[in-house]
Image (tube, rainbow, N blue to C red):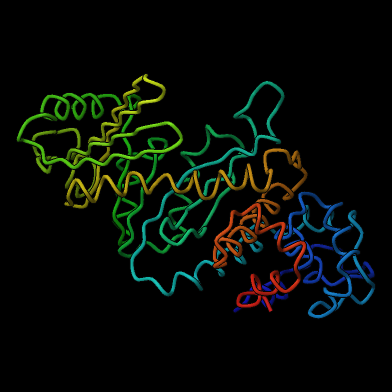
Length: 368
């Protein structure tokens, strides 16, 4: 089912007794097309509609012309956010059907514009599940603050199809219960360890660092150059989990992973040691790749939402407004990322605003 068809099935949040001058599906399609084309707020969406009305009438009803920005605001604030999110997931599932196995990264992002003054992590936090190879959002949940991310992750996992998928989560979502839940759903885990995990972290840290330069651990090294920086990542793996008693609390644990990252910037060297647990018995090359791939959720999703879509400037907190606009941006981003044009997202958005035929090329397979 295409996005336009799903929009038509959404429950209308407006009062049933109210005379509706504009179709809900028209309002949502206009908002999506305008967002693809570079609009950042509801007033810009309405002005885009007025400028492009003749073009939009080619596939929207628009019985009473273009809705006002006030109408757009009321609808996006009131729309059922869970039902609206299904439009995003349906698009992702449609594309994901072409792939057998996938790597899912789970991470949270605070909408900075909704934070209280002086408290940058106090804003609404959206925890997303991201298909790394395909650049698709598979699920998301809202929590009121970044500190509540850990409680949202188990509920998000319950929503996902995990058969044969690798699920990677930063330390905020690492616990034996999370590992158990992932394995019970047919998936595999790669979970980061940090100091706040007490005895487990200390045991893994001491065991791996004592053996990292010996024949006891297999290893793999990658070196990357760019932007005046040299980054070397050496991954060490031990399958001797029976020698680390604390790790046995994690369901079916097979591998303990250490990634030693060294960054040289302007003659200065920075070092970082990161530790992970996994139920997959794999090579250092595999884990080195997957640890790096996990962060595509930051580079290809969160970064674009902040930089390409200026999400952190949005201060909307009314009702469901913040999450619904986040969903709208994610659908727009996925449409642009799936387009074959070898340009940045920012350039693609401008081109969509300038060139109606290009916009049709971006949306036609999934929308109309």
